[in-house]
Length: 94
Image 1 (tube, rainbow, N blue to C red):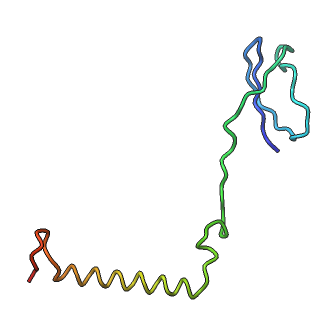
Image 2 (cartoon, helix red, strand yellow):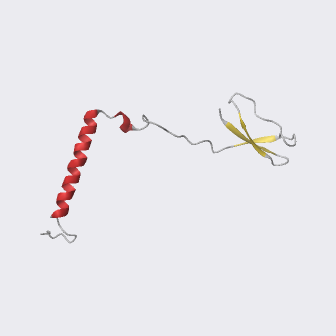
Image 3 (spheres, one colour):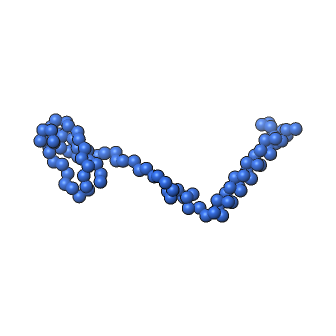
């Protein structure tokens, strides 16, 4: 159930009500009994916990193995280039 925020047009009292969507809105201020207006709230943030929320959660085992092999191959290649490779001016290292 959502939480609605209200403000009294007379005394300025602000309050919240935890109500069902189908419930009728609050019409009177609990403090002074005058009219209230419903405020637009920022809403609550969504929190995703657990698995099943990301595309990678549903990858096949063969895809995971290929991605791991590709990552390992890429890191080996980077290490090899670092040992010999070229300098920033384009000349080969010894």
